[in-house]
Image 1 (cartoon, one colour):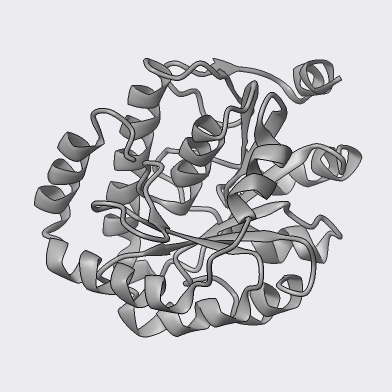
Image 2 (image 1 turned 45 degrees about the vertical axis):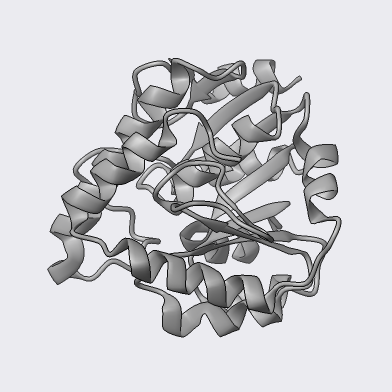
Length: 245
């Protein structure tokens, strides 16, 4: 099952970034072969449905958000894998990590021993990394192409916006973005090299457009503590305390 309208967005992504759909499929097939059937979907439903969920990225505003995140340890947290290292270093363990396996492997292995759920995304550029998914006990697989067997498609493009689409799919009541700055600055926690900066910004822009689209069809209430995004209510950290409680 795919979110209605995703096929069109996926076609646009393939064209814009010159991606190969066959490679996306190949990566997804490898991931499907690795994953075992599980009840992880049920665990995500129990965590997310009807709840307030924080979706955490590694943008420039993340550093300022850390103290607030530490004050709300019981709130469900979905983290893009580039934000995981700084979260763990501050004793914040995400409930769900959305990853295409390009994050800090040592940190990912470390929290694989916790109750953290991993949502591993397969695409044409990470075929050689898919085997790493064997490290994760609580794990589901996703694709940006056609879902099949154990591989699902909730929508989204980058780890951060896929986290938002995930929260939407599993029925979060409120979704609040933290450290997700879709601007022209790349956060210091991102491992982006200077030569990759242009494509990274292009991906962030595409992610932002997808979230704007999602805001027109979701039933979840949408907020952001980061850069203003069309369809998301911009809030302060003081507002965050009120919304969560």
